[in-house]
Amino acid sequence: MAVKKSKIAVGFIAAGVLALFFGVLLTFVGPIIIDDQIVKNTVIDPNNEMSYNMWKDVPVPFYMSIYFFHILNPQEILKGEKPMVEQRGPYVYRKRIQKDNITFHPNNTVSYKEYRSYYFERSMSVGNESDVVTIPNMLVLGAAVMMENLPFAVRIMVSTTFKTFKEGAFLTKTVGELMWGYDSKLVDFLNKYLPGMLPSTGKFGLFAEFNNSDTGLFTIFTGKGNIRNIHKVNSWNGLTELSYWQTPQCNMINGTAGQMWPPFMTEESTLPFYSPDACRSLELVYQRPGEFKGVPLYRFVAPKTMFANGTDYAPNEGFCPCRQSGLLNVSTCRHNSPAFISHPHFFNADPVLLDYVQGLHPNEEEHGLFIDIHPQTGVPLNVSIRLQLNLYMKKVSGITETGKISEVVMPMIWFEESGYIDGPVLSTFYTNLVVLPAVMEYVQYGFIALGLVTIIIAAFVHYKVKVNKPGSTSDGNTSASVEEKNPLLQDDMD
Image: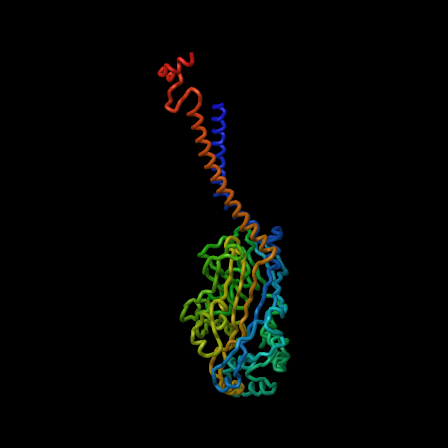
């Protein structure tokens, strides 16, 4: 019986060693298996049904929230007084994104056009598209600055044209008209006699060219052969660099198309992407870790240098002519109109910009942009991109519509494009990338613990059996020896 127990104990020791070995092996092999599955399932390939469909037709609902800077004192501005504005909004539009003309190439790239369309969401908005607001008239004030250096006689003719079509320095229109276009005899005149001057040949609106349009022909890497290249832009509209800016660095097309990034990020990673709307590449930097509905994330935000001028941040010199830090001059890609992009309410901009306009209150929570990324996969979990459109305006002699307007960068609107993973997509994401790795981790540590406990208990049992087996005592003497030393015991046995 003792021999049998001893053999069982040895068997348990062997099983414990195997369990311990398997657990230790899982600590090394487990992450490799998970990483391998991430690579296989994130490569842009029609065979990866879930991830491919997620990339092709983004299932996450995206929304664009518009905020107008309603002008409270238009007549006083014409007299040279400081502008006073009041934020009106949000007016919310659901954004639908769909890729089309998808073509795969032999060099592990894929080309596509991404189409976008917007649908007004009354339940999420402060009012209807019929609400009326007053903003600067870009056609008049923008043209005035553009023609500032032309002969005086030409400026007089331009001013006469404005009067003929009853165009003033400010517009009072409905939200729908300002967004998607309004009828203007001046626009019709310019399109007829000066074709190409305006971005649209139809109605003139701030977002008229965005609705039911595409963002250009993107060619990006699929990740086959090198997962580090996945989603990175190979070319845009056939271009590998831009011509808007003054230095090769500023004209570079860097990063991804702005929807996904390569997996396996660290805190040293950045989020570079090319934005056709901003006419340049942008880059976000790591801020902090966090969680989104149980899924771990890294938050990336815009650095203060993103829109800094060339004086404050030398690499941005190529984006000049610059004004104060916090403004990106996009006139070169916006038909030379004196338009500037910034963060909302001039957040992270030179404080002097706030002194020129009353009614602005910047803060990071409401006006800072961020992207929350799942670092293992490079998939955005929660996104909020916030930007502001501004118009540089001033008095221009000969164009009487500008009155005595003081030189100012005038905020017109700011918008937020936001979306987050939810519903079945989030459930699948959570199960595959949070629960299963956690289970695997518990299993590996469970095997290690089980192996150690089994080895210790079995070794102890084996030792006890060996010590207490017949013919041996705890001091190692034989029974015969004991009997010889104990005559009473011998007598009893007789």
